[in-house]
Length: 382
Picture 1 (spheres, rainbow, N blue to C red):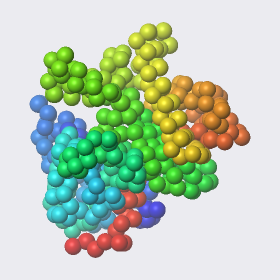
Picture 2: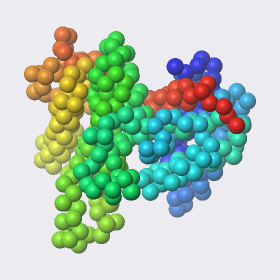
Picture 3: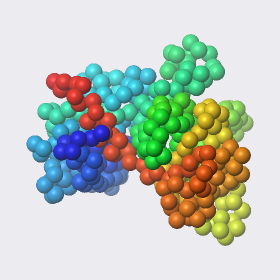
Picture 4: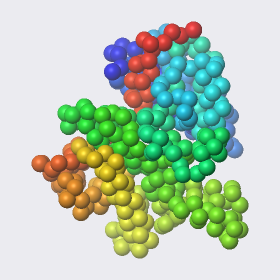
């Protein structure tokens, strides 16, 4: 649990944006985002310029980065590989290892590193902590993490399931257990936004997750295909004449809901669904079918399920997705109360069901704050 007086700056430094949040204990004092970093015509040339803007916005509220009251800085880092399985105090050696992992997350880790490098120059006196998206999923078993390809090749190239959205899954699974008053319970977390992932969590430990070596595997997403027969990619190359870059663009940026109906915003998809648009109907049914399949699979992984928790922009705001996904699962002790679901209650299952269905807003920045402060007593800042 975060302390009551410590101030932590949380930074999510991406390839073209920097999101920030400042906390005192668990209270959010300020937050914001700087976008279009390095893009043509943008006044924000690089991450250094972006952090200057962040510093200025905080200084305008007397909360500046140079404040002596700041306790630590927590950084979101997307890929920690197998090297980082818990929040880690940032040192030169740590940044070098994060850089070695860039080939596994070429769109994310460079931006994360840029934010780290700038803030370490600005505040070399402060402990700075890396919190990894992949870390929460490091507890999955070898059976869950291993792909059935040549083992030596996989080991050499670090091919395995890593999983992502880990800070969200950690936060939501813990909140779900607290909500039902059972700290050691089994939870299926459905993190549904433009990116989407599922996890099976038992006693706070992740046993299985839907994203794989990259964030492409698993659920249908806004623009990503999710699960796809690898043979389709070979067919696109051999018969479709597509290059690797074209295939990459297809499955990451032009697939998912956008590929099925031309729209990746679930709100618009549902508007078209209400108007009986056949493309939206198909896209929505594919989306929910995949979700239901993962719920069933993770029920089997866990054996007993206490809570199913919906989170993320879609999970928190779409009663129709929640209802459609779980319809017909009453034999498994899973049901949704239509009235509670429509009114956005925290618990949307009927009284007396074996499995509680919950809607839990995620708070990744608070989770990063908690993890940052949790390791400080166990480390010594140089």
